[in-house]
Length: 233
Image (cartoon, rainbow, N blue to C red; front, side):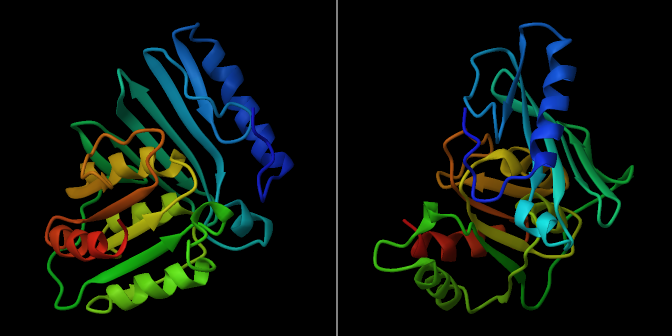
């Protein structure tokens, strides 16, 4: 059990415990994998991965956009994902092989742009403290290495940012994370929207210990991935 997070609220715990009560009704073959009190990846057929508040720092400060994030993993593959941004009343969902949706309407990734819009996301925990200095050194390295793109940062939840790529608001995203809850859900949504979301090894099926990710429309993916791999080994 791990509840010693940098940012933790009573709402995180309330939402996670609520999900656990629901999942427990389905029997022992359904287990919860969540950020606060259930952070051990279970060994069972059906796993429900939950980030009760993705972007807790944003939530605490009353900013948009944080999210409640849920994904269903069956036999090690994500089958369903949902990312709800209450501040914008936007619900992103996806079903494996059935597409991605925003408030029930199908979404697709962006088409070709002259200069691609790319988000850079670096988790502000100590996980990504750069060997040669502070986190700002790694941000600088990323910005310098990706200058061929129009670059953006935001305080949004990681999961919300993946969904913004999925619905075409941005062309791509590179992310260095402290856990994998937003990526399990956001990855399926982005892939089902016609894009590509992969881990460091280029795999679409995300593993619990993955921490480096690239996601983009199919038109932008290779160019962004090639540049990102030059920067982060």
